[in-house]
Length: 355
Image (cartoon, rainbow, N blue to C red):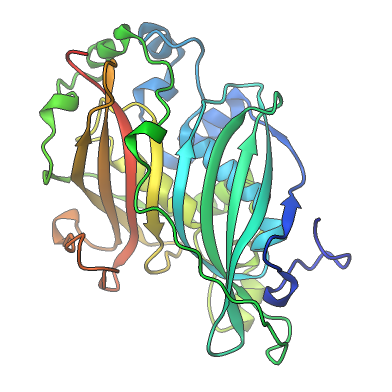
């Protein structure tokens, strides 16, 4: 099933539990997309920004940046799910199952797994599970997200109501190893940083020193790169009519924080999972993003060249990283101040000194 015939997108009352959507159109990613992603985010990740680095680390090819792949896959879902969104609210159970390489083609399908009308009756929250596959039908990504969507008619009756539960974190056994070889430890030769998996301690805090201002042109081009056609990001006139302004796509904010987090996590490899994430407050053009990271857990992946670090990165706008307060993880949903724009719980691969 796809868009309604008038091409105005689906509203909350158009969704049904169990609805399956095959999203148009498949997208082939190339080295040009890689370069544009670097230009828009400032990514310095050793594995993804130089072919010679990937060869040094023993990779079978030169993989594309994981968040480039995720944001592109996310963009495929927008016309059917969030064209009429108020905002994307959160993510869970996002597994990076296999890498993509230049020339691979991405196709995405989704299933509606939850619906909950808001008390105002003007909007509702739609929960979907999406799966991205390559041209060989191999799973690349799978994730759950929930998004607040406008209703076409506030008086429309929406009888179905289900807010699905999600896992707090992807367990170690479900994390893909991505085939890293012993030579992956040579990453220190190209980053100049010595810290590997064993050097990080649970509870450790890292204030990333950089900050990045979101230019209007940059976030617009990024959203177009991902073919994310949500009106909230593209249509300034429509947003002004609603008394607001265009929003920076939340995935772009994640990418900026990931790029800023290079300082302090220089030897990180790929993202293995996003366990949960919230776009706490909106980001607009002109805002300056900074972030800090807390090490939540050091995960032993068994006999392997890599270990996993479960991290919590909080991004703020127009504030210093040192001002960030990490709420107690056991205290339920965090009540963040207005400058916090992102609260992301994710797991990365990091080389180990010894298997």
